[in-house]
Length: 513
Image: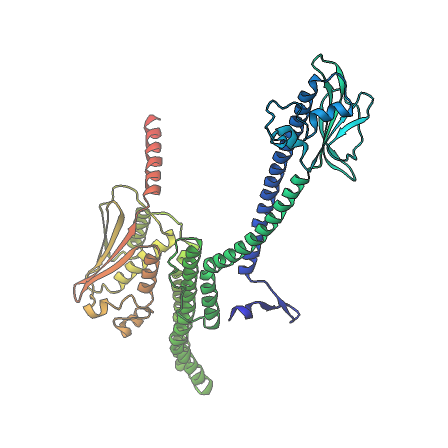
């Protein structure tokens, strides 16, 4: 399905509605996030720059007040003529060098600034000097003040200070008004620059976010396509290819492939179970049906035929019951990883129990147990399953030991695993049949196996159970000399050590008592 097609989906009413692709959500979300951060940062920078510029203007106002006050210190009385001699640009008064140009002086430069109005007032509050027309109302200051004033018609700095001569006599007042027009022009430029940079940053980050999302979400597209193909054909062997990325999406792909493999196994098991049931139950059903039809036609009037038919039907019914139970056991054995993955069992307890049970059940047989296991190893297997495997193998050994009724059981261990071997001295199995005995429904001698009550599922169940717990089962056999089945199960060292510690503690308590 193309990306354009995925931009639409059906709601429950059957009406298509527009949806936003995850890549676009990622891109827009990234852009908006960066836009928010950039705006916050720009506001902080803008505010900081504005404060610095206003601080500089405030310092400049103070410098202007200092310069005017310093120039007028030699004056005894302030009036327009006197102040003009000292402050007007064309006046040579106050210059030590007659060749110095008037506006090279810092004071006169400040007086000539467009944004600054310098006014001098007499003691009566009359304006005697002004560099420009001043619309701000004058107030008599008791001390120097420089304050920010925000009104309807004015937004700037106003500095006011009393003027004293060299004798510290109050002779007038000075007012410096800074409209901050240059600062405002600079602020406007900065705002437009920030807006332009914000738009460019949003566009670039959005494009980058889209490209990044496209790259990062590419594996999800592959997964999505694979899921759709699996949905269309559950029997497909298609899997998510190696993403060649060591991240969470790679982990997700591995888990998804494992899930598909497990689902495929369950589907195969289901099909196999249905095929096995239909195949194996066909014969006993046909036998029972044949006997019932014969009885229905004429056999019910003959007591001998009636008895034989009922007996045969009963035997076939028992065999069907056994067959169904074994097939269910085989199905459960395929699902160990779901239900019994964390079970723990002390292996030798089960071996000894099954050994004693068979000695009691088959008194005509000689059972021998040879154990080289001196610890109490714990293996990861459900106790009933280990018991079931041992019963299958011992029952199989009993069935095929016709002449020499002797069965040996041996157990040994190493640092990693426990080995259990069951040896009989019966008919043995040919090399060709050894490779097939673990196949379901396989019988070495079908006629004799049916007489012994076997369905050909026991060894298959045993193999599934052992391998389901990461163990191994193998067979060595020779025709006429018997067979040896070997089981290997890994030891759980952590649980074994815990068990050994508990037993040691119990022994110490018992000795102390």
